[in-house]
Image 1 (tube, one colour):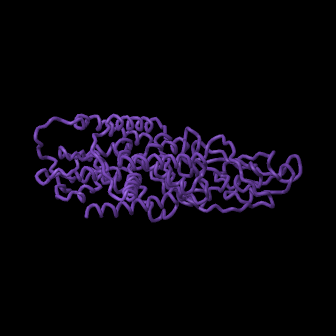
Image 2 (tube, one colour):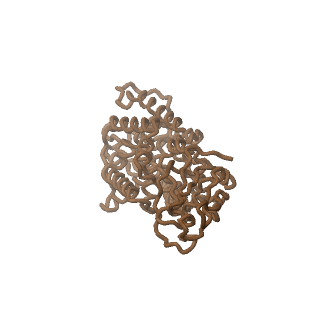
Image 3 (spheres, one colour):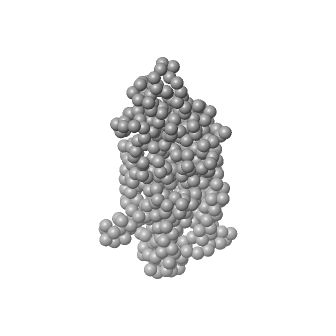
Length: 464
């Protein structure tokens, strides 16, 4: 029964979060993104952090087998492997790879504390799953597709061959939660009097954490999938209360026990590091009978980050590259970056759309606080960039035609058509104190392949 309940809950979370990254049902499933552990740490959402740790102390690593989409994805791969072979997968106990586990967590913490967010985004489970789904379903660039395919292949192969090995050797969230799960009050327990040494529980354990010979379970790696309970025909395994104050018989300490202090220090560093860092596109073109050619992204003096980010620095310190905002953006403005410094983290592009003043989708779904919630009436008062005009490309300035498309469509009246000192058509001039950087002028400029207007981001945003 416990296994069936776990599967149902996992399916609900897995489908909901997957739909979020596909761009469906943000109003229904958006709260699930807020329950992810690492984004909650970065957003300093102490209520969620405390809730996940409390659940782990009470019931073990339920988070990894129900809420984490990457963990459930691995279970799906295991299930497919079993169906292909026509019989259930069989695993074998092995001791944990403590050296690899600690090394990956240490690298992750260093990247988190020193702002190497592209490395954080690659290792973090939620972000990795989000990039994989987003770029497989809605690819934005060759680099994004390569990253998605490589992530899918790597995780699938690991799950196919070794079950939950990725969760227990690579995943930093799994490593952190393992410190608390070893002291879980409710956990699977082997009744040594009933055990007949059939090894069925060990063979069913995709975390390879049940040593049926010694009748012991490594609770730091157990993800509470409850497969062992169903496979034990002798009824020797139960999931129930274990008195945490009961004195254990004296026995040599295992390597796991010796590393308790080290794990506590690394977990504290994990949470501290997080605190420090604290669909359709509208295919039309206004402005005359210009030939509609694909636009090129201009070189900007400063990159553009969304309304609600506060500043470029704050945005990239908090962003884990999960790309939930990318999937939520209805105007195809947010897309993953391909430069190494911010690899796979979103930035704004105006070659396929612009940031409509009435749209606040990205600010409503960000789980890390990289984009803070923005009200529609606030956007016209927030300045994230400034437009500049290249008169050498402007149709009006070069005498090709009287255009004014940028001035007509600016939502804030930040562009005026003024007299050309050289005579001829009136030319656009930008009122910088009114320009909010939405990109309507850049996107709707008929000049191709490079717009005559470029929006340069502001390193620090400000409100009127």
